[in-house]
Structure formats: C-alpha cells, structure tokens
Image (cartoon, rainbow, N blue to C red; front, side, top):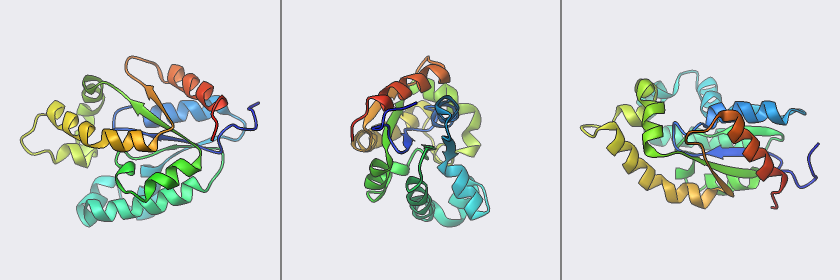
Length: 183
C-alpha cells in the first residue's frame, strides 16, 4: 500500500490537548496493514503499576522522565507503530535522537484557546496543570507552550495544526506527509 520510503514508525509529539492520543488511534486505523497505536504514557503506567499522577507524586518529575525515556527507547525500536508521546517527552535531550530515528516525527499543534478547552475538564489527570499555583489555566498553558515550543520544533520532521479539525482529517494529512517523507 505504501511506498518503500514510508516511515518505520510515526511518532506524535506536542503539548497536552493537541490530539496525540485521539489522532494516533485514528491514524493507526487508517493505515491498517499491521499498524498499531500505542500511547507512551499508558505503557509507562502499565509498567510502573500506577497512574501518571501517582508516579509524579511518588517519584517526582525527574523519576517520571527517566522511566519515560526507557519506555520511549523500547517503543521506538519497534515497527509499524503510531506512538503518542507524553507532552514533555521532548524535554530530555537524550529522547530527541531516539524519537527522530524511530521514523517520522509529527508535531501536533493547536491554538492556546483550543488547548484550554480540551484540557480544562481533565486537570486532575494532568499533573503539570494541577500544580500551577496561582496562574490561571491559559497563562500557565501559554508559559509551558513557550518553553516547550523550541523543543518540539527541534524534534519534529513536520508540523500539523489540529485546531478546529477532525481526527480523521488530521490523520489523512499525516498519512499524506508520511507517503512523501524522505529520511
């Protein structure tokens, strides 16, 4: 179905609420032919034996990031995977070459107001939002986006904006980009 230069894996990076999980599931289904969707945070929680907020509480962000690197390294060695990474996966320098060598890295972006509307109802499940102190949600998200944007840019091969679009529409765009991707 796909050209021989089609990527070995497709890795989705981006801030929370940009659609990595939703688009990832849609993309894996669309690609068919043995492609599977995997969420690195879900895999991490399975291996750790607890949810992400509990892991953050027990081991702190450093402990979480160390475990995340181990999970990403294992997943990125696979084939025919659509990998949805955690929003901070690009923060550790050692993750960037691992992600880039796995296949096509797609940075999913969205406007800040879209991110707020997608994340505000699940703040308790997102440790970096729950621990924002006195900042309102939009200000906190804008701060984090400003800090992480250059890291996403450094990691990604292509950028796709998910604002005001359906998961299937986004997945179709990623598939087109993957078909024309050159290492």
